[in-house]
Image (tube, rainbow, N blue to C red):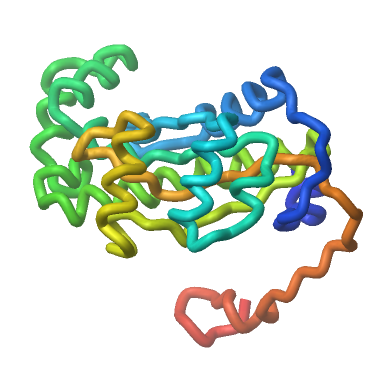
Length: 216
């Protein structure tokens, strides 16, 4: 059940030597691909990294986080802003059966097509969409009994940390100027079981009715 996966999911950073199979990785990726996205634009790309040298480089780009280099596999989650390009966006909508009038309306609407507003706004919307896919993948990993950790602290255009590093990472992963390594999912089997400990704000602290501060 998805509720069990949500309840039991935790960040696993220490792995044993057991390999995660390609079949299980594909199952995790397919769940990410099935995540909802605005107007079905699907602004994501995923690169699976198993090569140890490449994992070590990704670990360095993540400030030396050891779970990146020790993982059985790393899924690099790429925010693909090129998905909003008019020709690609239109083709997706055509596949949905939308007529030309509707497609033109969506492409010309700043509410529905953030690329009209600029690179920053497009990146913001793309990051929002990517978060759904990443969440889905972590839950599938939990269902499969595979340890997973989201690594968002990484050298990229958002953190602007060590530009030379993220430029070389983009080249290593084959990314273009409109594609950003947003985060990584490290996958492996937990070396030693650790109980789940979740610290969350109280329900009434984050949930309101009609207006902030009004109890639900």
